[in-house]
Image (tube, rainbow, N blue to C red; front, side, top):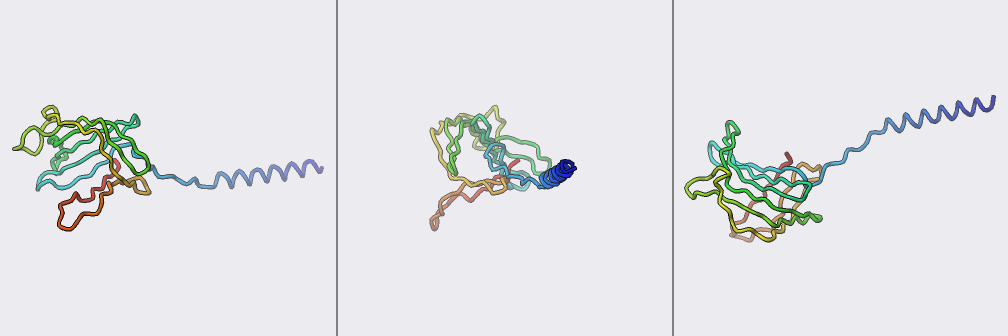
Length: 161
C-alpha cells in the first residue's frame, strides 16, 4: 500500500513538473546576424525611388546595388551601380574586400541596365563601424561626427528584407 502511495506521489509530481515545464514560454531571440538582404530607399524625384541594398550571404560574399524604381509600380528601371565581393564582420567592424564594382555608363542618365554598367577600379579594403538594432530589423553605418560647414553623408538606416 505504501508503494502505491509513493508511486502516486511520484506520478503526480512528475505530471505537475511536466505541465509547468511545457507551460513556460520560450523567449524568442532576435536575429541580430548580418546575413540577409538590407535595403534603404529614398525619393529620387517625383516619379522614382532610389534603393540601396546590401545582400550578405552565409558564404561571406556580399552584393551591393543601387537601383532606381518607378514609384507607382515598383518596376526596376535600372542600376546606378553594382558591387560584388566579400565581407567579414567582427563585432561592430564590417570589412568589405575584393569588391568588383560597376557604375552606370552614361553621364546623361541616372540609371543603366545591369549589362551596360562599366567596371570601376576595385577597392582593396573598406572598413565601417555598424550597429544592428536589438530586434535585428535594422542596421546603420556609424559615421564620425560631421565637422561644421562640411558636406557629410547622412545616416542611412537599412531595413532587413
